[in-house]
Length: 262
Image 1 (cartoon, rainbow, N blue to C red):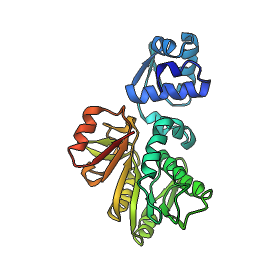
Image 2 (cartoon, rainbow, N blue to C red):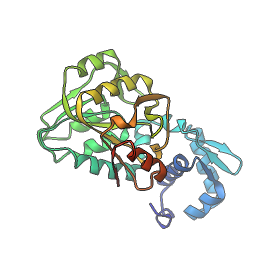
Image 3 (tube, rainbow, N blue to C red):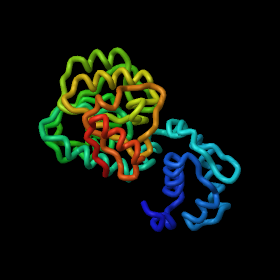
């Protein structure tokens, strides 16, 4: 989204755009946002105050900062809207890598849900997932062969299953491709998640597929979070955005990954 596109945004879209800027820059200033959106500083301060009340940012003198944890305090629905345009582009590219008849493991997270939405015209897919929103979306697809949801402990806030039961069930299957999301992708520290219990499940998913497709919008590139899933060289392909950190993307390429920027 270019600057000239943001001056007519409604309140919700404007506030989502503010959060996108926060996740990318780490800090925003009231006067800069006022100029960007073409609205008063008073209105911007109200936006920031509301977002702080929602736990989405921390107000500081003259603006706001992101602790990045704020993203994980949002509902799944709200998180799916952050960087939505970028996630949709990634999903279109990922869906193009799936062939009719494939068995596909789809992990949890908002970008994998976008991928599931883009698979509506694929035929005879077998979908295996630990994501409740992906299962719900699959109900609208008429051309699927089988949908398997992994049982186990349900994380209600983030809408996924995990635990020993999920891993035991997953071990019964073999798949062609994995659509994997993460909370951070670092050339040095690897592919990471905020949820350490899910990391073990993800590692098992990677071991059971022929090709791992990592889907991560630009805000995740260069970040390292709490629990490592795997090193980046264990991935086969990374799909991200053109505005991702260029130095980090080059370092990731040097690890041997196919990188697609959309």
